[in-house]
Amino acid sequence: MNRHYLATAVLAVSALGFSACTSNQQALTDQPTDANVTVVTPQGNGGVHHPKWSYEGNTGPEYWGDVEGASACKIGKQQSPINIKEVTASSSAAPVINYVQSTNIRIHDNGHTVVYTPTTEDNAIMVENERYVLKQFHYHTPSEHQFGSQSYPGEIHFVHANSEGNLAVVGVMLQIGEANDALRVLLNGTELTTQNDDEYTANGVGLSALAPVMPTFYHYDGSLTTPPCSEEVQWFVSKKPLTLASDQFAIMSDLYEGNNRPIQPQGSRKVEQLNH
Image (cartoon, rainbow, N blue to C red; front, side, top):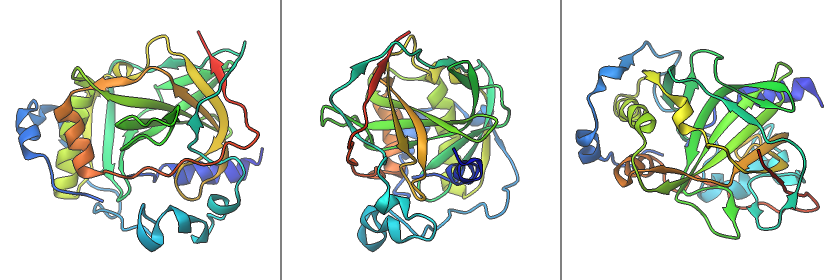
């Protein structure tokens, strides 16, 4: 595996994101106060980054391969996301998620999505006894991966890297149901971030509440789902979705709706089912 190539991918993935629509002001009113959200000085340009690529028109997914350094989007053979419909049982171990109860999270809207970046390296997953640190997470609405040609309302991508820069991404589907307290704190900061074009930090977020409990994962070799579409990314897509309240999801979808890359050909790749 080319370490320089994947190190570049890590830098690119730290900038991943989802075009802002109108805010759900009523939903914000219903949330707790912003006592757990701290204003921080933006690093560089605190405003929304206007990308050279998008999810529609002449800068949409069909043209991503024309973006400088993103030829893999057009010619790659192991692209993501895919439609998961046939899986092979595997004796390989599922990743072990070690997310902590209290983490400070920087929140930034980069024009593609809202990116949530932990301020420490305390959150990680173990893949075949190797530690992959959580670098950031972000969301897509609707989901990028499909199960049996069916999409979920949304999908969160938890992007991890090991000491050599190799990537492992955990995909968790979003389903409307009971409220999620960890997301509530994050979404307070999300509203403030997008309304003021500033970076905020949400304090004391329990990321363990966002992790699947005793999950079954679908594992395959794929790519980043945004330019540069770098390949050699290990994907672990959770079979069990994460539930959130309808007003919580409304905040997310009001900001970014339709920021999902179309399904890519699976080709000869196998999808393995990993169980704990």
